[in-house]
Length: 110
Length: 110
Image 1 (cartoon, rainbow over the protein chains, first blue to last red):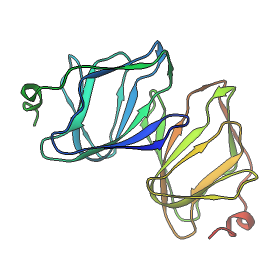
Image 2 (cartoon, rainbow over the protein chains, first blue to last red):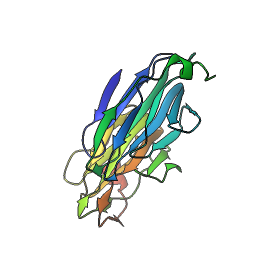
Image 3 (cartoon, one colour):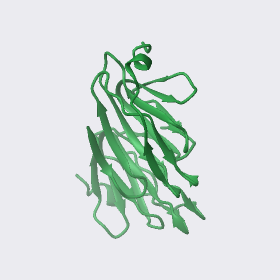
C-alpha cells in the first residue's frame, strides 16, 4: 500500500508491505542526482542491490539506493514492513520495472 | 537533540525538542530548489512561516518549508516533538539564523 505524504520538494510516500510482499527488481535511472532513499519506520524487511547480499532494514534505519542500480525491496517472511520512500531529485530521471524476485531467491533470506 | 540519519542524497536528521523548546527564526536561502521538509514522527509541535499563523504538526504529518522564507519550528507547551528534517537539494544554498521566538509570540499558541 502506498500513501503519498508529499509530492512537493522531495516526493515522499509511506509504503507498507505485508509479510513476503516485495516489489519487482527495478532501476531508478538518472543522468545526474536521482536514486531513492528508504527510511524504515516499522517492522523488518530487505533491500538488495544487484550483485550484493540482501541488507536487512528495521525501524529507524535508512538505506541510500544509488541511481542506475538494479534492486528490490520488501518485507521479511515473518513481518510487516513499512518504509518512507523518497525520490531523490535529479536530471533525466525515469523508472524501469523488471522481473519479479523469485521465491528461489527470496526463500533463502532469514 | 539532532541525530543524523544520512548525509548522502537528501541529508536527513531526526530532531527532538522537549516541551517549549524551539529554534530561532531562520531562513534556508537558495537560488534554485532548496528549502526544508519536516516529517513529524512523534508528539505535537509547531511550524510558523513569517506573516502566517503557526501550523500545528502531529505524527505522520509533513510540512514543506519553501526556500527564502523566514520561519521557526519547535515543540508545543505540553508535548515533546520529534520530526525528521530533510535538506531539499538546491543551488546556492545557505542558512541564516535570526532572533529567538519570544515568549510573547510563543505563549499565545495552544
